[in-house]
Length: 216
Image (cartoon, rainbow, N blue to C red; front, side):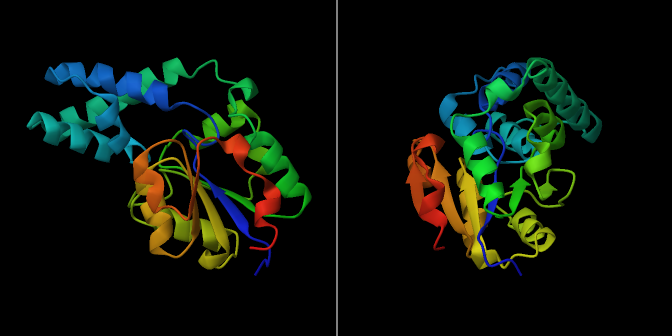
């Protein structure tokens, strides 16, 4: 196994700021149920699969729908989201992330992605970051989304890395919980108090230095 720590990145909110696009898309969907999605409730949708997000919304709105309607709404939400990110490019990478990844690769660290999004590979290609990743785990790769650790376990297997030697960068409570469950080092990115369960929290990715992990 690789002795250097392997870095596992979330996508939305860590590598690129597409969270607002998700928020806008879910707000449109919520109007179907006469529900105004707040930013506070949207925090519970971060890092969670599309179907689980809709499950939460249906629970909040006390709504029952058929399986066909459920799948139609999932497709509609994704179509709205994809239309909003159609022009995304390398300029949309969060400050500090690309330099960190490039320097980590130069120093022979393995880089993996675990995102609940089924559009992860599409977005990485748009950002021109796909070649830097040794493993990509997305919503198409797992049966259980965060906070289940299945995706992180798969990322560690694909990179042949002991979970204890993996460092996770996450902006969601669900992602931090998933990483903590299998003793990965978790780094929270953002201002949410829910990230305090991470091993360390930074307000912005640009505050993070690769040197901090050289002796991990």
